[in-house]
Image: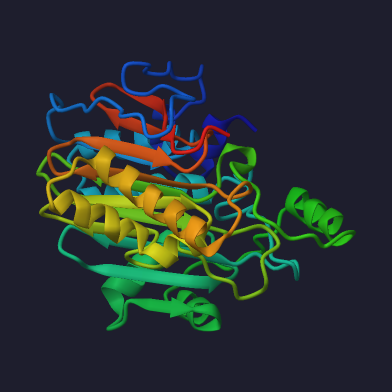
Length: 343
């Protein structure tokens, strides 16, 4: 099925025509340089006018950020836009690490995690949720319809049923085949940049200067049942401060949780650092803890993206191979993030 046809099945109507595969967006070499020396600075886009704009982790965010940008141009607020964007990825069975089609745990069960946050500090989160495609929307329902901020496991699924969310099997044939192949050796280890993506984290800044963010994933493939990474954890996988900026993370969630990564990035921006500098500091802190603990990092990837209220953006990773999408003005760019390590 063509992506444009697939999007129409989601009920996005005319918006589907705005999100087409097309040729790959040209890389902006003035902003980034793949494989540059460790710690190299990326030029800041200080001349950009704030909002509407959106950034998202990995190349598949080209489509989700474009969708968010287009609806914000028509007056949508940042929260509605970021939710609409990530839902495109969640509903696409070809994206095998988010939503429908996500890779299962070692028991063959697909469990999803997500969180969402707005510029006022309103938050919602779900973890280890089954049978629900749009866990981003479920996280928002937790935020807006309950006195809590996080629901997990059977409780999250039960809440989804009560709220009228459709229930369906999330395990597609391709993911099931991979799981059965994995069972032959049952070897578990993180795989950096698996198919060039895993979690999708997305940030939006609307025309009124309001920020919002969402992070959604099926987690690490073949994880222990019940494992939860950073994606649904406010402060780890996502953090938004409406007066400062926002950040989101991707990669090895345990390491992001260990350093409260996204909150760390936003705090650094609050202290006066640019989004780029703040992302670099967070990655270096993770690397420092690897060294102190004597842990290998060869098979681990961590990446951060950030945006401040001035419309400046940044992205940085532990290893090469991490890229992110930036949607603003009339188009979308796919940017390669610099990395701390060269291999």
